[in-house]
Length: 213
Image (cartoon, rainbow, N blue to C red; front, side, top):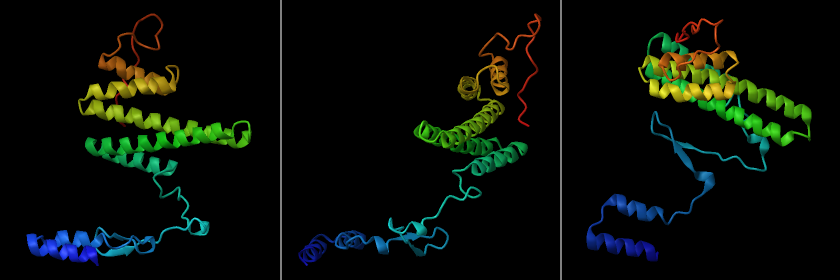
């Protein structure tokens, strides 16, 4: 009551607008988690939010690998969308999709690596399974990174491609196929000047691997 009278006094004395009055009034209303609402972005209608109770785990929604972005299929779906964008030469959209896919695969790889380390020596079978998933998602991350580097080349942005290619070589090692492709890209960009792998004494570099297809 005291706060309400004070608001009325300020309003009558200084002519505060209705939005400010409303803001003061809202300060009097206690937050109630059971009555929280969110707004539907399409029709601007309030949608009640039902919070999950910690004592009711059956109400928790599990991850759906086919629909969740935080999953291998979710990242692969972004890669497929990036391929479609590349096919139509929409490199800005391809850039966005590959950035998202790369981030998802990196997060997945880190999470599986952490689980593998946590269970090492406790349950080696579980740890090995998580380590395998970490390697699989790291491979997908490096594939997305390589495609992103090629998109930067197509957009005439070699300065953005070089750091990505160096990251791939560090992750894959130069002897693996993707590492060799990344090094070839650096050679074509002029960032390095010695071909690898060396051909039989002729000093020729391998064929270009710039194709986005």
